[in-house]
Length: 58
Length: 344
Image (cartoon, rainbow over all chains, first blue to last red; front, side, top):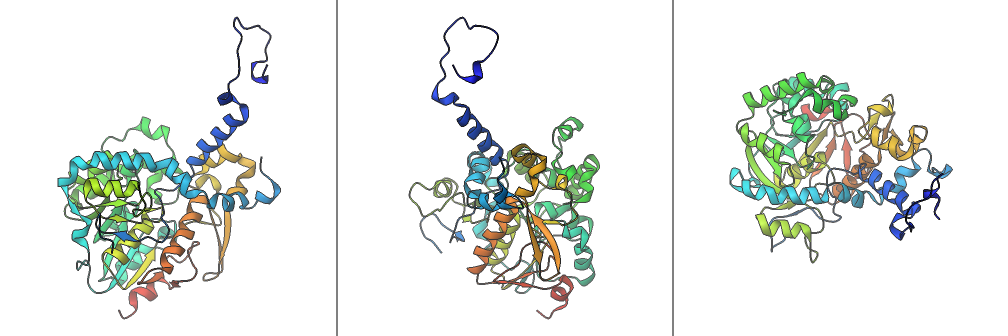
């Protein structure tokens, strides 16, 4: 059983740990959420300036 | 875990290559959703295309006023008032209050960040409450505009200033702007020019930006990650000014600024912990002023993006910020007084 279920009690049902609950992946998810908050206001697109119209580029 | 190699700004440099994706994760969906919602307000303004090549401000020079800490430390707005400037004055929304307080009416204001609660503060938030302030100390912590440290008073002031002077001021209003920003802009009678900020390459198949253009018909502009660079793009690519000066474009902090007074302090502590904050800040010796400044991952990304854009620009760019980390190939550096008193 995973470390996350250690305790001084027994569960009524058998608990299996799915891939999605992998502690490492939770950490990755936390880091991604934390990193997101460090982002800028909007995108930067390389080698582009202005596109004036839907079809014709200037 | 912070490795030895990542201390002293190493983590910020590692993040640099990922800032585009990080920003997309942060704001991409929100920007897209705001653009869809703003379709209903299309009739409140014109397309930015109507502003292209228009005689905004006299002559071929423009002055961009952003809201970095140099604005206060270098007394930038007083210099503009004392010397006068006949060219186009293009202000970020964050610099608008300072401009209006000093009697400077911008020829064009620019806004783009889709944030739901923060950006409207630069316009004055009619619904601002003490409880909302208690939940977000973003403005209180920073040096961008000192008066924002006293937030309710500052909010009342900008509400009044825009109610008095806002009518008719041109604004390049990004489709990504939030509902509250758009409502405030409309309510105070600003002259709206709509545009789409590029969220990706509009010439690629399945481009989100191209989809936005197809829906609303507005041009798209590469904003370089932030409103200051967007204002520079308006000057160089939309108004087609030959010489564009920058003020308040620090993209960083003075060396005596405490980390807790930087924009992402709370988030940085959550990510790396108080003891490892050095890993997220990069220090620069600005050779033009023989002074040290430091910058965070977002500002570092803005700096690198700007240097790429300026390398491809037909206009001459002069940084008159008198500090900060924005210097390099393609950017001349003058004092603001030198620029303002030079013969056009």
